[in-house]
Image 1 (cartoon, rainbow, N blue to C red):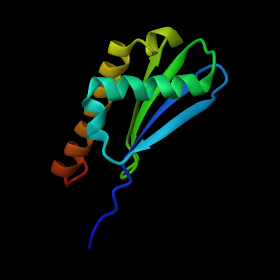
Image 2: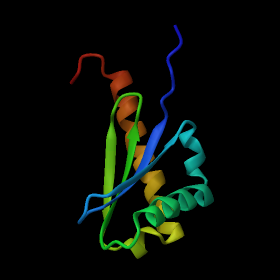
Image 3: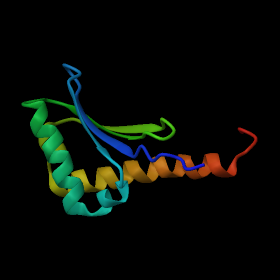
Length: 108
């Protein structure tokens, strides 16, 4: 039986108003490419409009595991190198939880 890939969701949330913009990536490994990751974050932040502080979130839609990182300013989040590194870091954390679940059959 084939399992449907629901991909990963990358989202940006303006912390004061809780307005969120998100995009689903069926092939999240493409976000390891710095240019793609920073462009994706910039597009999300642009759709939020002016904001003070933001939260960047990566969610594995297959199992619901989600991690986020807070940014004190929108400008910091839209800095290409910072955005790309943050996306990679969040994906690695989510993938780490995935691997832990695969190896930990007892639930400990």
